[in-house]
Figure 1 (cartoon, one colour):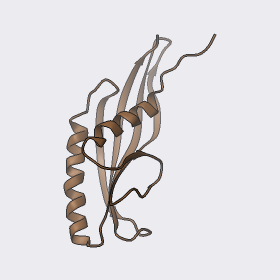
Figure 2 (cartoon, helix red, strand yellow; figure 1 turned 30 degrees about the vertical axis):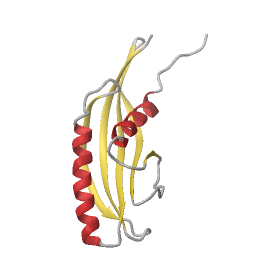
Figure 3 (cartoon, one colour; figure 1 turned 135 degrees about the vertical axis):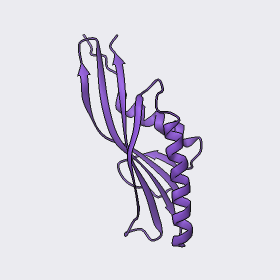
Figure 4 (cartoon, rainbow, N blue to C red; figure 1 turned 30 degrees about the horizontal axis):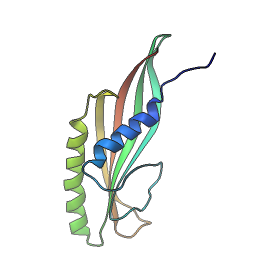
Length: 137
């Protein structure tokens, strides 16, 4: 007998990508930065843990990061752009806290910075958590 399962982790990444892609360019799923132009958004689920599991359902807590990147040689313009776009991204995510694929999306913190290895690249890194409930069929 074959085992059936729900592809929770990647499905959640794809749904985040679809939501963010409505308003942002170059949204991708990866564990590392990929240069796709001046503005990029990277999504990556870093881990998940069971909240509760039984023979009929599972409930998971998934943790990850969403990183907004912006490349500009002018540090003042870059700073303003990153803060404004990251505030919009946070609101976009909060507008989708509870949907079919997850519930209780939270953003415990946002870290701002500049990448020392790539000239002019700044970022806003969002830590996120979501909970997922899956009924076994």
